[in-house]
Image 1: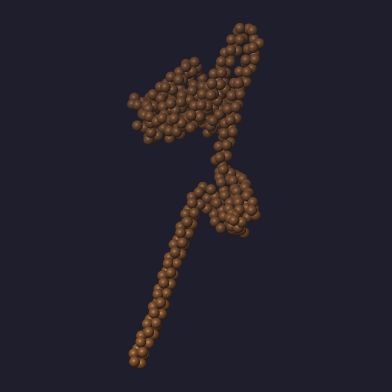
Image 2 (image 1 turned 135 degrees about the vertical axis):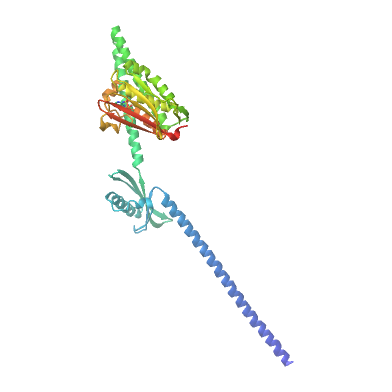
Length: 383
Ligand code: ADP
């Protein structure tokens, strides 16, 4: 009996010990599993943080605006590559670096600040630097500075202002003349004088309308709007331009010769734009030549290019002006341009047409001997 009791007690003790050991084992296994799960979650969290940091960094690297971040003490923590170009020790870049440091320090005081920094180059550059505090829910996280290159917007703005000033100037001259002529006409009784003044009114009105036509043509070609590309034979383009220039050339007694290949030189182009370009070259050749001096138009295939050359034996263009004649409103001799009816938009139109077709326009000219303008369209555009 006693033996049986001892055995039972032993079994119970063994069972209890086993249960405790089993429970401890389970707890150990569970704790191990939890630790592994926590570690896994932590690793995943770290991966996600690293991934979003990489994404953020790549985005900051890609933007074409300088970004410089500093801690609350103003120490720089990060610069994207665009901002890096201003950290090299050249004078201009040091100027930007100094401006960035000053603005970051001011921004760390809680202010939003900005400044323009001009680098005299070359090339001349104008930068806009702004800085602001990084603050979230009342807590300071330092400051950030942004650097923008505003050279191009400033240039475009200056061009737009010049353009408006030039148009106003060009329009004011014939408008003033018209008003003066009208005033004189009102008090005039002599039929001969009246008819002379009326003729001047007409010529000023034509001049005004020519300016408006050139402006509209330039604006249409510049925006390249409604530009339709179709196969067109350069010979036909030259034919169209020749019939437009014929009256002026005959009136001025400037003969026009053509040298055209027998086979059509076909390019994919906007026929209206190309005709306008060739017409403007012919118009200048006639305008800036003395009577009887011939003008020659040549079309040819030259390596990779289909070329149209307009050569005259006119006044020629001084070397110092040749770079600028393609700018809008640029005239070598304003008084001559005015009497010949020009406003300085013709060659701007030609250059835009060339650019729109992936081509180029070149000038060769000798003062007193004549000029040669070559409009070249790449063979890639040839059909
Ligand atoms: P414009 O309306 O004055 O002719 P363009 O833009 O066509 O304007 O030409 C700009 C300037 O270039 C002209 O004012 C003229 O001085 C000069 N120019 C252009 N083509 C010729 C040429 N064939 N011969 C001499 N000068 C030229």
